[in-house]
Amino acid sequence: MGETRIRQRSRFEDAYVGASGALFSFAMGLSAVAIPLFALNSGLTAGQVGVLIAVSACAQLSVRTVMGSLMRRVADKHFVSAAGVLMALSCVSLLLSSSVWVFVVSQLAQGAARGVFWTGVQTHVVRTSTSAVAAIAQINLVSGIGQIVGPFLAGPIIEHYSLERALACATVVGVLVVLPSSLMVRLEPMRPKRKGRSSAVAVWRQPGVGLASWAGAVAGSWRAMMNSYVPVLLAQAGHGAAAIGVVSGIANATSIGGSAAAGWIKMGRLRAFLVWGIVTSGVGLALFGILAGDLVLATVALAVAGVGAGLLQTAGPAVASETVAPEERGEAIATAGTYRAAALLLAPLGVAGLVTVVATSAGIAVLGVAMAGPVLLLRGRKGLID
Figure 1: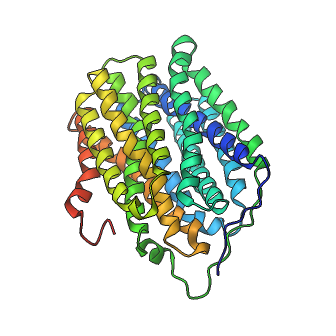
Figure 2: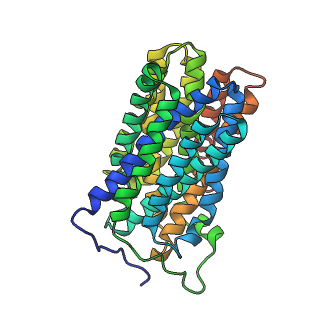
Figure 3: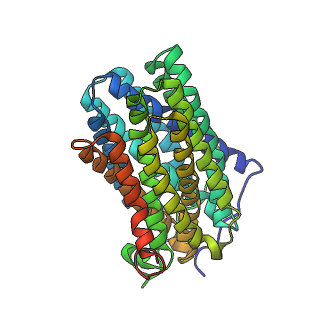
């Protein structure tokens, strides 16, 4: 009946997958602090930084929409290798020029890298595990190590050396992703759909995929702020690069905690926890916008939002993959990821529009309310969160 999970694994498969995730996430975490600050240092405004991050999200959205089809033609491990190369290109391009057009190219490469990496690696681990949520929790936990170390090291590197040195480090680490990813077991591309199976739109409508898609959108909004307006707002509040790196690292650490905790949740309870994660992410981000001037309170608020976002990043794809036919798992994960990518595009654009009339802090607070509001209003009904 359809495709069964493939368990052809080498002794070191978990190590190869984990190393790929840790290295990619380290480069991502390092660049998430360095690139916005490099943009500000190059003369761009906060609003322009938001637009650039939206360009990255646009690239990720475009990639996500075709990943379901691509995974029926290309082995998923190759997407992980490609992601490392694209991440390196996004950083090294800024070392060559700091013009606006190079920033655009950099963000296009980074968005594509994120799209192919997360869809590829999540599909890979789901196909080699008996539990989707445990498999995704494991890769998110290991990858989270890089998301903690990257921002924590970004501040000292920038302060003691330079922004250029931080970008160079991210470039090297991105290239290194190719080494462990090339050693991962090669799984055959996903099987074609059986005749008569539903289209991508129908996959979205299947129970669980709709809620997983909204969860992806909320997690994407939180990540978009972490990659753009969180460093910008903290800098505007007068906090130094080292402090910004620590705050970002703590938020990423709590996100990892939420992601790891999701691995212990029984499948029957996942939907309820997704709703909880959505509300926590939105409220925490709204409070961060209000409290950004106080470093301690801002860190606590962002950490609370991180717990919810981490839970969503693990439980969302798991719910999506477990509620569809086996041959549609990759497409379901890609579909939920498409909404995450759409949020990565729309959230920075929305805040960029808001900061033309209100302060950056207010723009972030409004976004946080918008993330949690629909679920609070529709909780218990059929529709958006079904």
